[in-house]
Amino acid sequence: MTKKIIFTEKAPKAIGPYSQAVTAGGLTFLSGQVAINPETGDLMNTSIKEQAEQVIKNLTAICEEAGGSLADIVKLTIYITNMDDFAVVNESMKKHFIEPYPARATVEVSALPLGVNVEMDAIVLTND
Image (cartoon, rainbow, N blue to C red; front, side, top):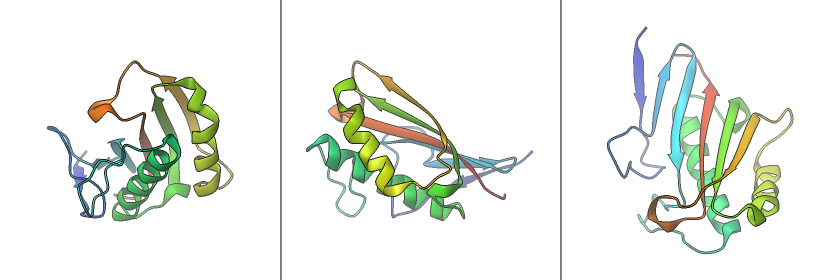
């Protein structure tokens, strides 16, 4: 099985030794995305709502580069630093995702990279 590395300037560059996404076997695995604006490189460390919106924009850009869309996500994992933000993140998800929704897990963690409050990664059904 071969793998294809996915990269787009429309999403933040990796902040460590990893790829934005990797496609293999008809699936694309998106690395965790945080609230970095790819146009400016600035961390959008504002409200949880604004962070979630930027994260979803970043996921969208990578999905599109891989030949898919948010509708093609089959598994989404959300990491948040405060479970009290669960409802706010759900509202952003409802705004950008359509039914049938992907399988999903939401996990409260003690900290995330760059001090953000939300990170998401995904598995996308694509053709390689």
